[in-house]
Length: 159
Length: 147
Image (cartoon, rainbow over all chains, first blue to last red; front, side):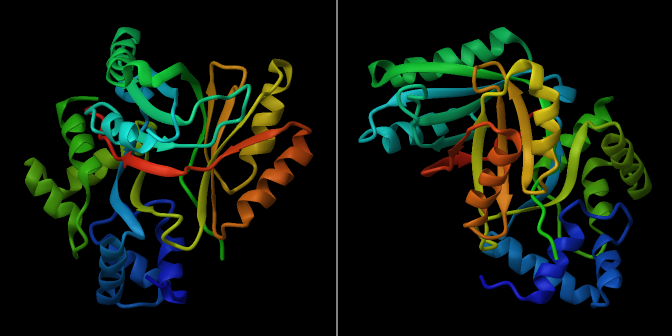
């Protein structure tokens, strides 16, 4: 989808959040000098095209009690990583799963999967399930727990 | 946080309608009235239970780029480097993690080539190496956490 100047204005007006008023799309329209219909249409088109992944609430994991947020990282064969990554991604507790580049020798991991537990045991159990699934395909792994959120604003585009 | 807050959080992680009175539509599904939903959302955002509420834009679909990057920050410089890194508007998230690579942040830029520019600027300001780890493949994104 090719975004025009009006789409970008809508993105800028809503990227920090949707107004908390009864008619939020009308509020955005008024701010930009557009009709409500146009804002509704354009946002529906962007959602359809995947420019908007979804319109939703993003919770702070910690405040919901998920204190053990682990980035699990695995060293698997590059020839197998797509097959294994898809299997790991199907586990119900994995929130993100990616292949990323290694930095040898100090960073040998190429498969990343995020897990979230309310207790350390929850998170460790999830790690153990991934380890069992990967079996001997995982030559080594590590779990990096987040100790602090330093920033969480989401992406921003500028004018 | 009570059961109504939990129901709101669980419902709104799944999505939000695009229509004239979307809060009213969601409130009805939850058995609340519109004003109640708006008030509670305001509080959940103010208290930081919700980091944000609204459209999640897809950087690559907008012609931009995302990357994950990490730095080994000496412990005594951690706060100073956090401030430098967070000052870049392209840094969307930043987490401290328990590893020698102890700072992990997501960059979101409007143009793909800006990832390199921002990384070079962070390296120059901090004097530290940035390990850039852009995704090669994406297998899944999108678990919802139950409140």
